[in-house]
Length: 228
Image 1 (cartoon, one colour):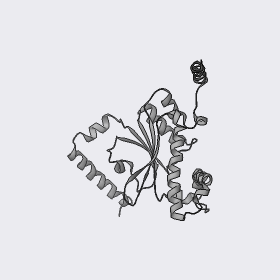
Image 2 (spheres, helix red, strand yellow):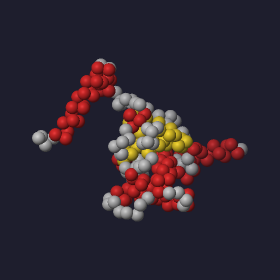
Image 3 (tube, helix red, strand yellow):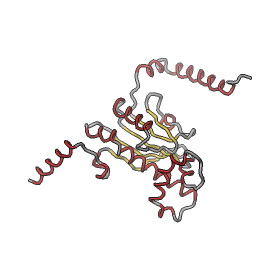
Image 4 (cartoon, rainbow, N blue to C red):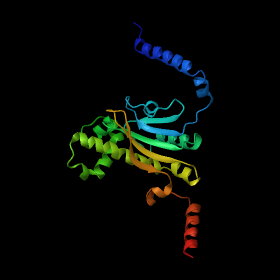
């Protein structure tokens, strides 16, 4: 048996898929090759059961994707920030969608006191969320706690996206850009809107709004002019 026998099915499936797509639309691959103009950046979990394109019913080229364990946006993660910057500044996406999923293994691990190794450092930000809202979890069982923390995690990551200089600079130059928080249920395949939608800087807490000295001076002068 070939050492690559495990990959044979992948190559076979790939050829079947390519033939199928070409039969359905002979311009499919030439169109993909010509351009990439997605309107959406998806920030989701690395879980193999969660596929951005399939969940949203979009074709390749219609969504730009970043995935990591537990769909976390950390301000020191230059991988995530690079994807975000390219999507916003170069591709000019109009929507950033942070999507979690119920039953997330990363969120479940964050609720435990057992060490999993290096990933413990990555999940620390989720533990911080739990710690901040710990009183809310008092009367919840284990599964209810995981479910709630999955939702709170999405909400926090939406905030983290909005607090980046990348997104705020886009808003300051008048670029149309919205950030949304969704969650996906593996039990029924349905996306749920967590009603976390941010469209401009005025919708985030003032302490996180960042302006240059020139912008601050102009805003100050405008404020005084309004008083006068």
